[in-house]
Image (cartoon, rainbow, N blue to C red):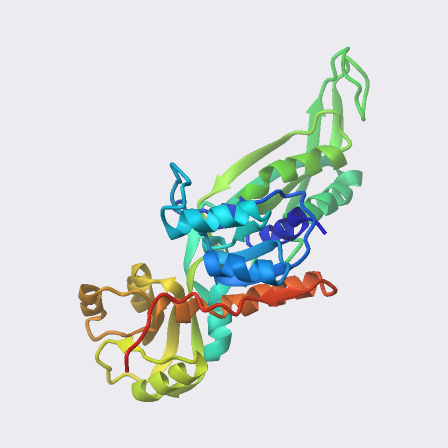
Length: 365
């Protein structure tokens, strides 16, 4: 199996198009055509993880956090980033990062946290806009279903928990082929009319090239008429954070105890406890302070995330309990998530979990 087979599958689940603008997800080192000897999954890829990969005969490291985050102007081994990259390249080890794109899909990092805590009725906390496109095309009625099937296979028509969604209405198409045309219907230089279906489907914007290719391949006309419209709609399956409900409402102190046990935490930094029973819980793996206003607006009584600064805790304003559980602690179960994803697709291929603790934070108790 080649590196590209694994990375393409991962990107079918968490497309790189969904990563944040500051991010650097994707293949960072290595040849996509390289044959894989083994896969090592880690939260962070640092020197010791590359050494572990060598010992376990793994030549593909899949990490959540990109080791190359900002541009490297030189690679001399002067810091841990450069040393990690040098060691990986010298030993033909590919490094692949799947970061905010995995954060931003509804089946990603935040779903894993929600499962650990025991939340249900889950929704994206801050859905993204401008990630969808509408395709409108005109097809001879007798060929409409065939073309529509091709568009669905290419990825069109997914709306929430519904698939193969479309809208169509029948009308009359009118055209005159020129003498250079090779028409599917009619004759050159003669005005023709045909019963056609106007078909509309929505698809993820990053699939535009694939969608147009599928349309042209399946459409019977020599020249397929279509137009594309970017949509400002919120995509309910793509965005930051998640919000859900506990099965049984908990008093704030009981919620903290439940959270500590569920996430295997040493410590929780939190704001003063409110007098509100906790039922709705907002979550965001990693640094989530930017979502505090959304969590309050959506009615959450608690917000589970990491990396809150001192003054940002004041913004809770007694409306919500902020629980900062630590960046590493909030995302460490991403390794399990990636393992499950790969094992489902490649059940006969060995997937290894890194035993190296990459958490740079220590607690003195």
